[in-house]
Length: 125
Image (cartoon, rainbow, N blue to C red):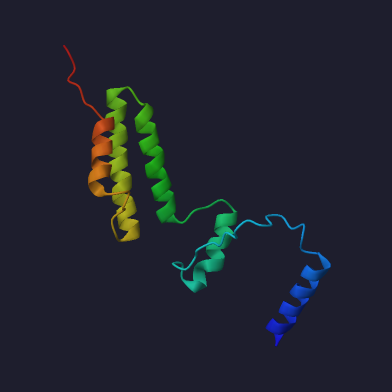
């Protein structure tokens, strides 16, 4: 019954033109997919998201991407090596949080990209 009343009011408002100037008119709606979040945690996650916090799994993924971006610009070999070690630690941590491996694209492609970015040269004495 409430659904029918709501539909009638929406239809009447549309006929009067009250909904013509809404922001985003003509664009698809973007729904947040929180179907993987347990129902009892959805409100808490939404509040944290609005405050700028991320769930630990997503924060770990963001940290990994930031480290990969940093690796692209580093030229100092020792610092690159340290960042690769940090990257390995972050991936391990993320895998433990997720209880399943991270699928970046494909593990082999990910490995090849990291190897391309890191080259270790022997020091000349």
